[in-house]
Length: 117
Image 1 (tube, rainbow, N blue to C red):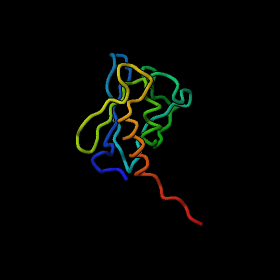
Image 2: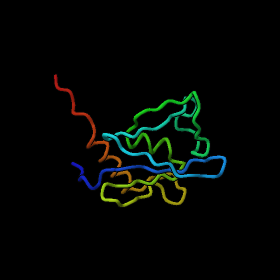
Image 3: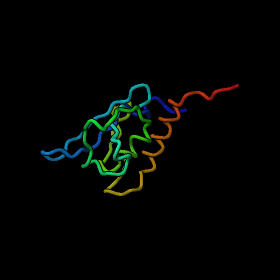
Image 4: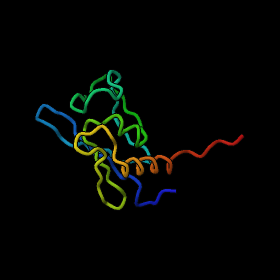
């Protein structure tokens, strides 16, 4: 069982624009994160290629799915207690252990209960 203060309030990440890079904030809504996913780039292009067009659609992703789709954009978790935690350190592809544990516990806390027949 996850502690309430260890749940994720929001995730922010860098997105490339014509003026440079800006940080986008995605808030948690009922344990899921509303994010625009491109049909052409299912988690493969870096955040600099993130674009909004008619081929994109908005989906509600789990914390792990969101982090995987924006992992090249230096994602930062903001927890319910107000503390912030970087998910990847120094451009590494390896997720920090503490961030991985918080992401897993957040998804487990908001997972639907198993169906019993």
